[in-house]
Image (cartoon, rainbow, N blue to C red; front, side, top):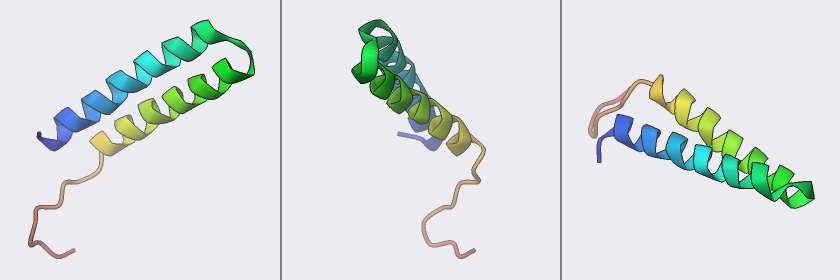
Length: 58
């Protein structure tokens, strides 16, 4: 799987988890919602990170 595809999968799963947390409600729902929102944020941030190919040095 390519890097950008992985990012979109993480963002998509974050959206699904966030919606589940929204509908659960209460303390459990808030935790699930936060977990999903963190995945959306980290997946989006990962899209802007430069890719490093194997064998390259920084």
